[in-house]
Image (cartoon, rainbow, N blue to C red; front, side, top):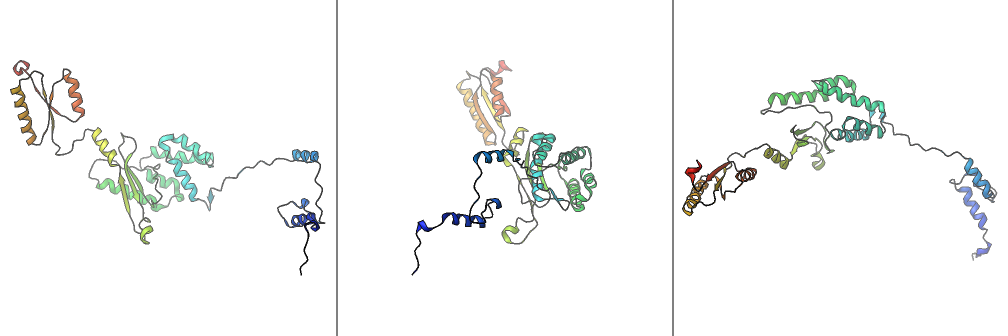
Length: 303
C-alpha cells in the first residue's frame, strides 16, 4: 500500500530549487546548485545596480535589399507601389518615400535620375537597355520595341504610343507587358490591360498565353459628350418657340407642322417663348437642342 504524503511534509523550497536548476530561462547566477537559492540583494543595492547598467539601444537592421546581386521580390513590390504615386507626389515625393522604406538615399537619387534622362531621350527603350546593361534582359527591351514599332506601323487612327516607365497596374496577375489608354487633356486613364499567361492555368491547370484589357465605359461616354460628340443617326432636336399672343388657328398650324416633322424622325419641342429668349435658348442648347424655329404673333413685322 502506497504511503500517503502530507502537505506539511513537502519541502517547498527544495521543489522550487529543483525547477531553478533545469530552467534555462533563469540566469545561471540565479539558479541554486545546492538546493538553496541565493539571497536576494537589498532593495537599495538592486536599484543602484539597475541604474549603473547601460541601456542597450535597439536598432532594427534593415533587411538585406540584395541577394546575389538581385533585388528580392518584396523590394520590387515596394518600389512599384511607391512609383505608382509619381503623378500625385512627384519625383521628390517618390524619392522621399523610397528612403523612408529603407533604401539608401544615393540609390534613390540614382534611380530617380533615370526618369529625367528618359524624358529627354527620344528612343527611350533603346536608351534604357543601353543604360541598364546586364540589369535588363535583352529580350525585354526587344519585345517592347517590337510592340511599339508594330502598333505605329499598323494603327488605323490618330494616336500616339509611348513607353512610360512609371506605369504600374494594381493587379498581381500580369506576367508581361502592361498598357493604359489615356486622353492627354483629361486626367487619368479610360482603359488598360496587359499580358497574363498564368491566369487561365489557375482554373484549368494548364497555362494559356493571354492578353486582355478593360475600358471605363462611363468615363469614355462622359469625355465624348464633353467634346460635343453626336451619335450617328440620332434625330435632330428642334425647339419651336411660340410668342405669347399667337392666335389659336396659328397655334394649331404650328402643332400640325411639329407632328409632320416628328414623322420624319426629328424630336420637336413646342414651347412658349420667354421674355429672356437668349437665356431660354442657352438652357435648351444644354439639353441638346440644336435648331430653333420662332413663331411670332405678327410674323411680317418681325422679319
